[in-house]
Structures are given as C-alpha cells and as structure tokens.
View (tube, rainbow, N blue to C red):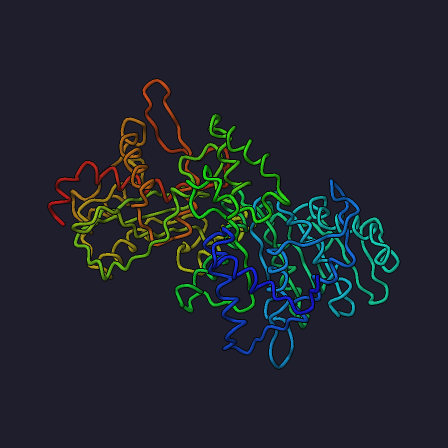
Length: 561
C-alpha cells in the first residue's frame, strides 16, 4: 500500500461518520475537530501529510513484532493507529514548521497494543525525528515498570537488521551514536532526575503512577526542546487520588470544549484519544465494546472478552475489574460504596440564578490530619435535585507534607478555590463560621438548621448559635441507627444523578472514597474511610450530616421553599 499521500485521519473520520465504525463519544468529537482543522484550517497550523506519514513509514518498514503469534513479522498498523499517529505528528505551524501537539494521551482498554504503539513512537523519536542529541525516556514510579516500553523497543531493534546495525542496546540504555541520542527507562527511584533535557518522554500505564513529581520534572525538563513530545498511554485505574484523575479530567474537558465551542479549556498543544464506553450499562452490549477496544477482534481476542463478560454476569465481584480494565470505565476499589459513575455528576449550577431562599448546613470538623469540610445543601421549587455548595480547609503548615506524602493534589485544589488554608497546624473552626456567613451574604440563603457531629467543639457550637439562632445547630449522632436510612436515601439520589455539586473535584474524590460499614444482621449501614489512610470522606460526612437534618425536617423545609 502506498502510504505517501494517504490521509488516515480523514479516512478514519469518514468511517466514523458513516457508522461503519463504533467509537466513543469523545473519539467522535476529536476526529470531527481534526477533520475540520484539515479541511478548513483557521489557525496558524496546517496539516503536513509528509510529516504525518513519516512515522508510519518508519514503523512499517523497519519494525517487527517481538513476541506472540506475530513474532518476527512486520508491524502493520491498523487504521485507528495510523490516524492517531498522523494526528500527533501531522499538524505543524505554518511559519516555524514545528509540531502543534507536544503532549498526547491515549486512554484505551487493555490488550489493544498501547505499549507497542508507545515503543514504536519512541524508536521513531530516537532515530528519525531529526533531533540531534535526542534524550528519550520511558518513566514510571518504579524503574522495572518503566522498562516495559523500553524492553519492547529493545526487542524490536534485535528483530530489525537495519536498526540492529545502527543502535547499541546496553543493559540500561539504547544508544544511537550517529546522532548522540539515547533512550533510557527511569523511575522515581532512579538516582537522580536532575540535568535531564528530554526530547521524548513516554509514561506507560499512567494510572499506576504514584509519584506526580517524576511526571512534573520530566515535563518541565522538555521546555528547552523546540518540538518535544510527551506521550501518556494508560487504561483506567481504581486509584482516584493519583495523577491519573487530574490528567483524565483535563483531557476530557479539552475534548468536550471542542463540541461546546467554549474557550475555558483551550489547549492547542494537547491531543487526547479517549477510547471508553459512553455509559456503564453498555458493558453487556457487544455492539458497544469497540468503543473502548479499537483493536477488538484483531489485536484483542473477541472470544476471550466474551468469556470474561459472561463470567462477570454470573460473578458480580468480577464486574468492577472488567469495567475498569476492559471497558475503560473508571471504577473505585471494590470496598467503595459508590461506583465512579454513580458519584460523577458534571452538571453545573449558579446559585444566584436558582435563588434558593433556604438551605441546610452540614459540617465535619477535623483533627490534625483530616480535612475540615462544610456544605450548604438546598432544593428549589418543582425540582427534585439536591444542590450542594462546598468548601474545604486544611492546615497551612501541613499542606506541603500532605501533598508530598499522600500524593493528593491539595495544592492544585487550593489554587482553584476548592480548598482554603488555615494558619498553623490545625483548622480553626472560626473559618467555618465565616464561610457560612459568606454564603448568607453572597447568595441570600437563610440557614435555619446546620447539622454537625455531636463531638464538635462546644465553644464553636455556641458561636454558631450566636450568628444563626439558638435552634439552628442540630447535633447528629454518628452511628448506624441515625445514619443508615438517610445514607440509603442519599445513595438513591446519587444513582439517579440528582446530587448536583458543580463538578467539584474534591467532592467527587471524597464521595468515591466512601466505604460502607454494614451490619449483616439488619442491613444497617454507615460510612467509613476504608483501609487507605490517605483517603478522606469528610466531604461526604458533612453532606450526610446536612442530609440527616433535611430528612428530619423535610416537611418544614419543603413548606419554606
């Protein structure tokens, strides 16, 4: 096949548009944009078919599979892989001729060949990208994990006579002496990350990265290169607090902005390919499986996946892992109360437009290490949704340590206004009082009741009564007898996506962290943190305290609004 003038981006889009290919919503949005950018360029960037195709020619001419049933056979890329590569490499600035996209992310279910793609691109960047003194790295938390892509590249070199003559494969490095270039695996456990000047970085299995620092250091290190490439490939993960969620949220916001024509998340240098089911319920519909598995029936064995699905139907304990790894549905740990889909609600609201008259507060004070959280929940007439306004606090002296030790992006959330700092090494309750006063002043929401843990500081409770009235503070006894029924009712609202919290990422993380303490004898439940000490559920605890009050005062509250 003559690749020289083949535009695989447009070919892929045509098959998507015609219905010949089943893809996820976000893949459809992305390729529509790419097709429009090619056909009607309105930016300083144009699509250069030669630059777009050069990596594909290199891969199919020189690289061979290293293992499995295709071992020794040339790598022949599928249409979706060719379209992906052309999209990354083909868009260049009309004046400088430099690539538009310096960062690319591939979210795809397991066994679709993502590590092979990463290895192929790495070898192209090492040898044919035209970068003198190229420094290419495969990175992960542990060096052994970082070696997965690097070892695949090393094996492919040995299978290729042309590359084997030009590249030297050492124990921990691949050298291209002609250009004085190297390719090395690195982990955050490596001796040093200082002094590196990477031109290409690959992060394979982003969901497993536990040290955000290595990603930040390597990405910042590329700043002196004229056209670097930072590539992330991953399946979905079950660990909500790591860098994966930050990258996924941002990538999908950028894609969604293409369709909504907003400029809030414009990032001209990021391109993300999100292969996922559009809805959790699609996992039993074979016609939808290709949305998360573009290599299904060719790269990935269809019959094996069928067997997994049938087994999961009979064994519910297998469902979470299947959805996460084979269908790219974000799941939490098996002990979690809510699935990610149940907790996730991206709907937004403006309290000034809704104009609620009355709200109910909820508070969860912290000890030294936990978050302090407060919420105002409210309803409006002729609307059965529950709206939440939230704020969190952490001790300023502990911020840096919590970010470093817990690997939680509290610093990012602080900058975005979801989290406030309290001077010293603990959170003073006065800040919660001040925040509730802000809510009243800013939105005109009157707070007749505020639910709180009965163990809260008595002086603070009295202070709150001074501002909001003697009958305002409602102590909530923490236990199954009090919390079980409201928690189950709240679960129904989450399942129906009727808990609207303005897509607050700190709320979402807290909700996903909630585990269930179950009384097997009578089925009563209450929330608990689970086994991971880094997880916080304070944002849910204060929501539940407020909701307990709402359930107790429902008739009075509904008559008020």
